[in-house]
Amino acid sequence: MLACVGLVSRKFQAPQSLFSRKFQAPQSLFSRKFQAPQSLVSRKFQAPQSLTSRKFQAPQSLTSRKFQAPQSLVSNPSRPFMDLKTLVASLNDFASLAFAENWDNVGLLVEPSPPHTVKTLLLTNDLTEEVMEEALQRKADLILSYHPPIFRPLKRITWKTWKERLVIRALENRIAVYSPHTAYDALPQGVNNWLAKGIGVCTSLPIHPSKAPNCPTTGTHRVEFNINDTPSMDKFMSAVKEIPEISITTLSARNDGEEQVRVSLNCTQKSLLRVVAFLSENSHLYQKTEILSLEKPLLLNTGMGRLCTLVESASLATMIERIKGHLKLAHLRLALGVGRTLESPIKVVALCAGSGSSVLQGVEADLYLTGEMSHHDVLDAAAQGINVILCEHSNTERGFLSELQDTLTAHLEYKVNIILSETDRDPLQVV
Image (cartoon, rainbow, N blue to C red; front, side):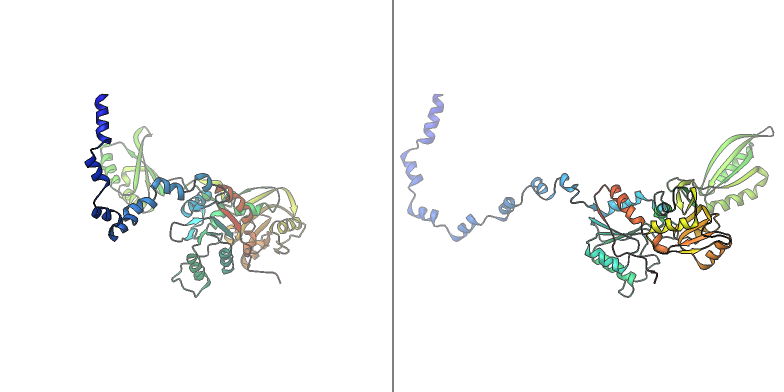
């Protein structure tokens, strides 16, 4: 402890000579201390860039807290949004694009440069220039147009045609465009099911059921045959295995007391021709041949059109009033089937939203309900005693969007503000 005291006294009680040197500096030093050169003054008050950057650029943890809002604020329903890619994936989950017809053009048709955030989604049946102007005024980030505005390929993007102008304005204003069209027609709770709600209580099935989109099949055809279990079988099977794009399974079989092998070949359309040619060259080695077409299973409630059976029959006049009320129409077009009157009973209705000729053709029913049919298709139906009601193309589709608005809002977990177009309408009017 005494040693410590000695050290302390040596530290703070310095010899007078040192003390005077410390505090009574020569005048030259004193002036240098307080009248510093300009370079030193500027260095004292103008800190190096490294110091100023450290002073005003906060650590990453602080900046992230400052500019990345808490999740509770991000998910707040008052400020909803979704990334476009995430939203499109969710739309595809809602209705698989595999349900769409092969000729259709569906999915994301116009995409602004990523990243693209969607806060407001505008629903419309048709994307016209008037609807595009509305989308701009209402600050939509995505337009879901039931009908695809781009159907036939565009060879150029100029200001010359209205569809080209739609693409230009969408990209210039960072508005994405998505179209589901016939994928929504096929849905169990899609456009055709909505249309069926207007005819009364009924049971319904698709006229043309869809195939399961996610059910894999190996090849398009299966070739099956029996071959005797002989030494030559191995050589024959080795040659079969050399054919590309086939898969082989074998089972033991017995035919007329002989041990045989049942061979099953799954092959593509292309490899089927080679398999058949090979078997033709070695027909003496096999027997009991079958060629089967492989198809994906059909879905019970998904597909094009609906064949509806009413729980209770109703007169044609009653059906007309029901349909007018459901579609909010003052008028529609009617072709009476041969021998039918307004009092004829209706039990079975075949319907298809939009243009239904190809879907309804040949279907047995008391009434066809669709938007439009060709003149000659109407004549054919009427000649068979089938009544036909035509409501104009988009009048059989547009009302579905109000139902879709609620369904999609819930499907997207209330993250996007979904609005209905107020300018979208059928181009044809009764005058």
